[in-house]
Amino acid sequence: MKKLIGIVIAIAVLIVLMYGAEDLPPWADPGQPASLHVSPRYIERAFEETGVPNIVTAVLADYRGYDTLFETAVIFTAGVAVLMLLRRRLP
Amino acid sequence: MIREQEDIIIQTVCRIFIPFMQIYGLYVLAHGHGSPGGGFQGGCIFAASFILMAIAYDLDEVKRRFAEKLNIFFCSLGVFIYAGVGWLCLLLGGNFLDYGKLSVILPIDPVMARYYGIAAVETGVQITVMAIMVSIFLNLVTGGTHEEEMQKTRV
Amino acid sequence: MLGLYSMMAKNNLMKKLIGMNIFQWAIILYFISIGAKRGAQIPIVAQTHSHGQEIALHATDYINPLPHVLMLTAIVVGVATTGIALALLVILYKRYGTLEEDEIIEALKK
Image 1 (cartoon, each protein chain N blue to C red):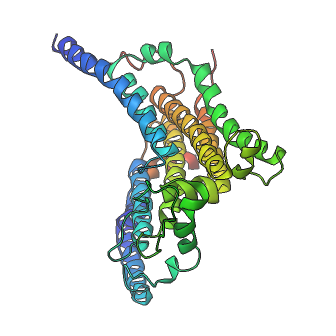
Image 2 (image 1 turned 45 degrees about the horizontal axis):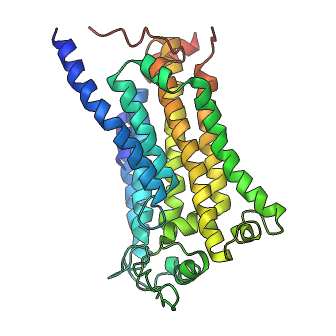
Image 3 (image 1 turned 45 degrees about the vertical axis):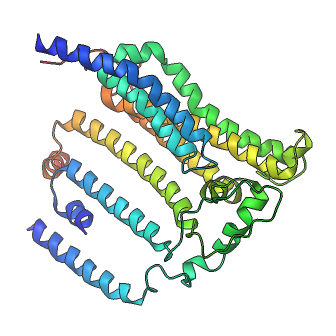
């Protein structure tokens, strides 16, 4: 019974998603809105402003360094949470 | 009997393998500027070497090489390095995490100051990711008790 | 879709967790595939030897680096979530002795 409801809902979500996927811009198009506003500035100015050839690392640690700081805090919190959940009876 | 021989082969191979894995993890971190890599990737590879040690050897071996208190110390050291570099840039007169202002205390121009700022920050991220991965794995495998009983249930 | 189906319809808690993992990796792959451009290279600047001269980089030569950056963060969040979920499964198993969902709900009702 539960499996039948599961299959019906999954197929319904699939149909809705494929209907919405027709409106996306054509794949690998250089003029799509995802790569128009901020990303050309990152690509063109990353090497002269930071001296790092790897644009992904430069964006991750310099232009978006604040996000990476809280990302590290998230993984630290997950480790502390596992520690708190599992180590209850200290000798 | 067969169990003993199998252990010797695995242990000998892992003894050669584990230092190379650690060097590869540090290599991925150091070459994060020129090829794909960086902090997160190098940290995971470094942690995988400790997990291999826990699988091939006893749990006591890992605890002897890498104590629990040192592990927990490394977790917070990495976040501290990251926030410390940002705070240092704030003290020197710029925004938070503005690495260009590091050229005030180091004898380099602002472009290379950002280069070294990125390198220091990625080191902090790698230390934290490595310590957390090993800690989560050890806690999950032993169920929190960190005893030798779980390892001795081989048939 | 496979992930959504197994999260809803399977009984065992471990299979639900695997379904969540499949769901998450599928979305990450989809986001990375958005940033591709026809006839472009990976976002690592190739010529670095001419350090004193001007290097002109065109944005159409390299693929979009932003999805890669954001998905690195998403992968780490996924690892954290899976780790905590596995810890919760260990505690549930110790307490109830089983990992089937309906048996746990039966034991909770009493």
